[in-house]
Length: 179
Length: 361
Figure (tube, rainbow over the protein chains, first blue to last red):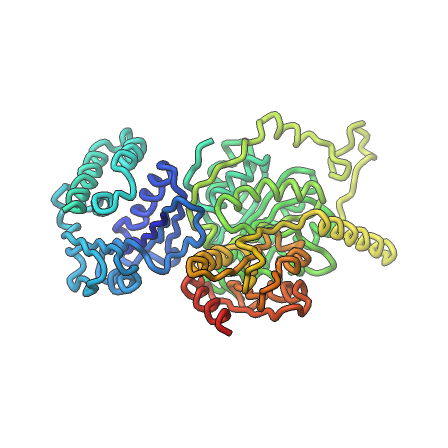
């Protein structure tokens, strides 16, 4: 099975990191992965996106034409990428920054005011971890334990408080994804 | 060793260090900046030397000097920077010295842009610098292969005393994929390599007699001497052509209706399209040259199955390798080309559309 995902948002929202953690966790769970960022004159406030492919087979193109999952953290990302989602695919978006939403009816849509929830958890930076939680809750693409271990090994020594907030955000995201 | 998720730029740098490269000279340029950054960070840790040169031209001439000392040395850049290195590359090839040059291609000509492209195929495989010389050119299509090629490139450079180029692109440089490194050469092995008194390098010979020095030179004023030298080079290139053809066969069968030829990043996209069409019962094969010089002419000719009505070449340029494919096809079947330029990368859907149209013809 192959899952193709695009994550998109403003630069600074941590969309590249969403793809990276999903790729890393999937690799640790024995899958083939590729992570292809948009790069160039991007900056904070500009747009950024990343294509992540997770597969049981060898990955041919790392370029995603028709994603199975789109994570959109702002409205321009929906406008640009939602028309490309495969019929039956999943759109996860952040209503705090997507006032117009998406009109497609042939896909599953999950939305939440993710920026507001991140602030509520205690740090706007955990927005991307919240999104990862929603992906896990909805698709079971990776296991919570894999990413929790990953984060713990990175952050436990450096910033234990932020680690706790990140794990809390992922758990909250999983609830949203399941509901 | 466990797999690590890594960018192509970093993976190839790590693999070069593991292959015993302890000298690296370069000048920064996007989209290969992570490569030079990785070297800046890691070279001091392995007792190596990293120099950010004042220009690409200075960097390639530092490589020339270090290669003349018989050491494993590498430089890297992206398209416009590689153009600047061409004079030095011609000198190194003329002086028959081993070194590794990495080109993480971007859009051109001129300063172009910083997105992935394959516009430097002619430059890499047909010359670029002046004179009758050849580079061995390896074209990776995944992060793993990019890393593996670092070790291969140093071995080939040493074997043939010839510069070797790894011709990647911005996508392979920027992309992360799992990579499993070959075991690193131990400190003892690296020290042993350094101590090797190669029969050609400028270090004094083992007997310590300073008169027994070697000269590194690419100037031969006497035409008869140069004639002999160039003919010897030509013999070496013939040997390389005989030994170093590498290519991948993908979904080749007697049922193939179309044979695709693509290299590097472009081949990944073509594979996706072939997979999609296979689900619809269409048989399309692919030959991917892994080394683009020497080029697998005969192997492509052999891959033309009985039902193949067309060879389709896809590249991220306006058609460069397609000329070599036409030589390989030798008029047996028509050769068509489609590509994208300017740093725009085609999608699997676009390739599929092209192939579908060709199937209907």
